[in-house]
Image (cartoon, rainbow, N blue to C red; front, side, top):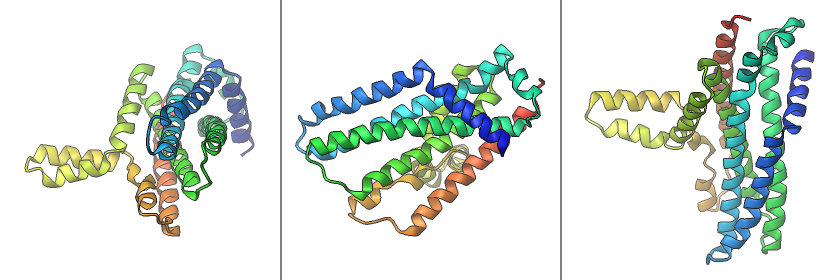
Length: 254
């Protein structure tokens, strides 16, 4: 655990010192403040301001996680600085897990900063605290944890950063249409379409597990079991991706 913690701490410091990280955070803050102006043109001002802010936080976190995770190991492999890391008594899985955890922590910290400003903007607009907000933010964090593991897996599967980013974005999109893929497979009479839909439905992440809006629209509080399944799904899917990433990383010749 000592090696993992050390690598994680080093990764967090590395990201926090990176100009691109602060650029994304700054852009997020500007976007959230700008949503205050946009929402003033809508009749449902507070609802629109809330949705715009939460969507902006999640989208910017996704962009950050894609760029940082995909380039995380690739850059060190290309510059050969990874040799210096692995010379020390550090196992490869410890290095990979520490890098992954540090990246996730860095992005979540950025999400927390944007959330704090968004809440401040909401209060200025006359909003009062509602528990669904933190639920929505936690759901976004869960998605980011999963997507970071997927981005890391693709970065080790492909030698091109562009292709890794493209595949990660594609998985993100498919993950939001999991139920539609299942419905398409069930209703289609074509065997190939059914097979492809079934495969995509079971391989890609199912982000319906993070859909808090069903409860919010019905003015309901999610049951404890819903939180439990969300956590289990997040840890399980992330664990599988990290296991595969470690397998690919172990095949690299350093």
